[in-house]
Image (cartoon, rainbow over all chains, first blue to last red; front, top):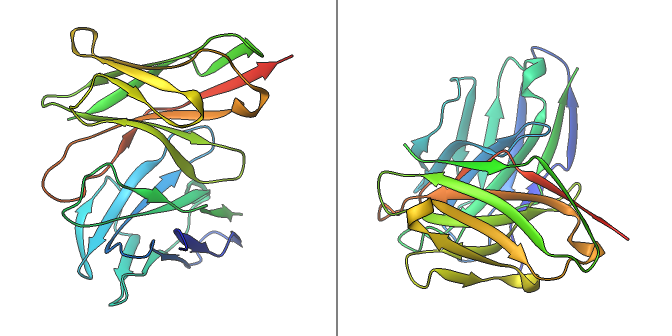
Length: 114
Length: 115
């Protein structure tokens, strides 16, 4: 049983560019959450998707957007990249209606903005 | 609003010594509390969770934590440290709303284990 997978593993972009990160949830999970982890910090909640809609959102600007597909996989898009967007982006999957503690994390995508 | 505070950004112990990583929470409602471990260049792995059942929670790799409401604490302990325990540890809080809820993390504690 595959766990949460994310692609790509690493990514280098320049300021002003746009980036798309991808996540496939654990088998049987229908909810995907995204977190940003800056160097030396704890993960910060970006947003959560369920039934192809954004259900919760953290304190992130509209430059951060997402999408969930019918197969429950998800994308995180960041427009007009800033140097401060450099971070590890983590995807977590869970089952709607299930215990809130059952969130499984992927290995992350390391984004570097130059 | 819920939050957690991790006391000590770096903790160093000798192999075989007691590990104690501190976490205090702030929550207006009964919280769900978690400890995650992150090894270099990896994602987060759940060590253990408190979900209003037993106050002493046992997790993987010999770790355990005790929920103390009077002290608003959820400290992580392990009787005997191993070199493989060197990693970053995060405390997190959540609130069950009937749907999967977001996790709010602390700033992390880096555990160093020395010979």
